[in-house]
Amino acid sequence: MPTSIRQFRSLTYNNPIMYGSCFNIRKSKKFVYKINEVKIYNDKTIYIISYSIPRNHYTYTKKQIPGNYSGTLYINKDDYAIVKIIENWEFMENPESSKYDIYGWNEKYVNKEIKSESVETNFEKINNLYFLTSSEIEILGKLYDIEKNTYQLKMYIDSNWRDFKTENPIKISNKKEVQIFEKVKYNKTFWENYKITE
Image (cartoon, rainbow, N blue to C red; front, side, top):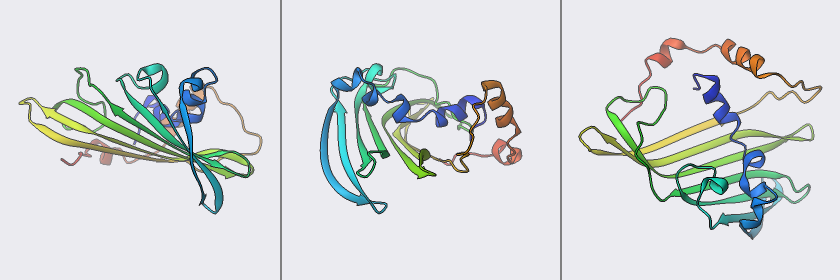
């Protein structure tokens, strides 16, 4: 559960259509695209297109750590809308860093090494408009304790969005967004005492 507006935004801004390099007019020319197949997905005919980029730096991968970036697009044949994007990163190196910033992290871990990350983002048509409705993030790697013992790392983050207002939407300011976020009720005691299993 996000504990700050910054953590919440990191989920809401996980929109590869808006922020993905493969959709940038200039950067997309560096990507390699391939139509893999046409199949039925959610009762719709879908084009499955894979993409990759031979460049491994942030401008194209959106990650600070150099790595191989690739993905898959699911495109609706009827209206050419993207209904799913799968993104994959295989990291080539991990700079020295402090423990991974996550709420409830076990204090015994002093460092991390991220090997790969995958993100599946789904879009759904509601009242003739497409919305980002769910996202699944999986991160794999290793953890290190102060004695340099290693532990397998597997993180999974599942986000779902619903109750979209499609009539007369109003753009709100950052200040109002923060106020709305702070009014969300959650079980404070549960999250303060929540411990990640080892």
